[in-house]
Image (cartoon, rainbow, N blue to C red; front, side, top):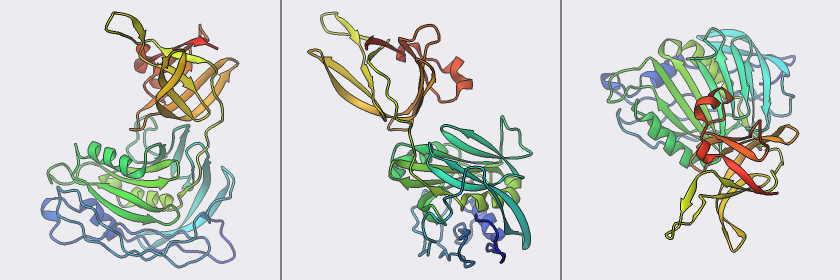
Length: 364
C-alpha cells in the first residue's frame, strides 16, 4: 500500500461471491458447477487499474488438481518496497460494496525476506525471527483462529508445497493450483476449505500460498473460521496482496571450533565414536566425519538466524532440507556445550530439549 496522494486510489472491489465460492468449492453437493479461482486484488500504488485474472475451473472435490491461472498483467515488481519498518499510511478498500479507509503499517523483515502493509487497527503483529504473524485483534493472541502469517523455508516451492499438501490432506480435501499475487508474483495456492471426504465445510479454513524465492520459498498462510470468511478473510487478502519477497538476511557469524554430537555409535569391533562431527559456517551447519584427522562433510543444514546473545554464548536457529526447525543454544553453565532444541520457539524449550542431539566442543 502506498500513502494517499491528492487523488484517492480505490482498490477494486473484492467479489464476496467469489470468496464464498472458494470457501464452499468442492464440498459435496455444493459443487454442482465449475467455480472460479480467488480473485487477485490489485494494490498497485501507481495505477488505479486492477489486474485481470482469468477464471479457471476446479475439479470435483476430493482430488488434488493442478490448475494454471489465466494471463495476469502484474504490476512492476518491488514498487511497494522502500518504506521504513513501522511507517504508517492510509488507503481505501471496498468491502461489501462500501468504501472503507484503512490505516496500514509497513513491515519489513530482512531475516524472513518480506515486506508488506497490515491494517494495524484490526490486526496485532506478532513478530519473530522465523515468522511474521498478524492476528485479528479480538482473537486470543496465544491461540488465534483468525490470522495471516508468513515464514521463510529453505526448500524450493515445489518441495514445500508437497509437504504442506500432505499435511493438510489428513483433514481436508485440498485443491492445488497456480496463482499470481500482485507484488509477489507466481505462487502455488493450496485451498483447504472442505472437510476430508467431501463432508462439508469445516469450522476452520486455510489457504496457503507458496512463493518461490532465490533462497528457497516464502509460505503465506491465511487461517480463519467459516464465520469470518467474508469480513476478516477479505481484509487478510488485501494485506496479502501487498506482500513483496526480498532477499532474506542471515547475520554473518560462525561459531569457532569442531563439535561432536552426544549420540555415539559403535564400529564392528566395539570402538565408540560420535554420530557426527559438526562445524559452523556463516550460513550453514556442516555435519560429517573425521577421516585421518580431516573433517569431511556429509550434509549441511541452513542457518536461518544466528546471534551472540551474551559474550561467548550463542543461539543458532537452523532448518533441514525438509523443513525441520531446530535451535542450538549455549548451555548456561558450560560454554563448551550447545544444547539442542527441536523447535525455534523458546517457550517450548523445556519440552523440546534433546540431549542426544546436543553438541560438545572438542577443539577450538
